[in-house]
Image (tube, rainbow, N blue to C red; front, side, top):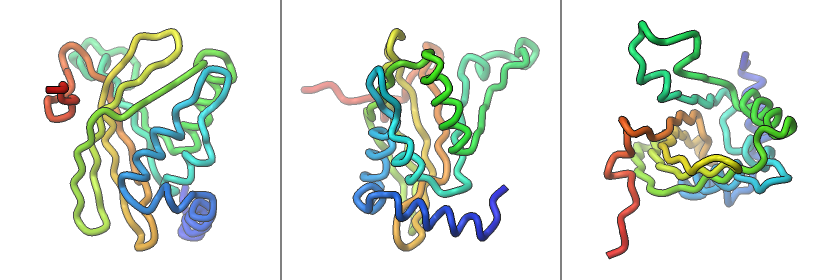
Length: 178
């Protein structure tokens, strides 16, 4: 549970740990997010950089399209949404890496659509993800970002993968070269 004092301490620590170049613009923070979570086989994501991008009470929310596509009567106990604080997401992902289940991960942005009002922004970013030993996957990251007058913070990231029944919308698909 975040207390006001804890939030202030986190912000100070994250601000000190973050590179100003990573958090001074929306383009920079989104690029830093993709760069920090990607890693080659035999290493790990840059968790310090990753953590420094997030507001202390931020959530990572995975929407599982395999579950959301099912009628309620056919759903088992598998959750459609998995919402975790940033540190829990890091711990869960690092455990997969340490256990050898996740050996390499690269996520790259395809197309971005951004809406901004004052110090609040919403970014829809389509991605292409490759995980060692698995087929290429595309999907969408929906990012809520806020600016505290000094820097941008990621307040939440919700994501879901593309499926045959739910392809990427045309506005989030890269245009073919003419």
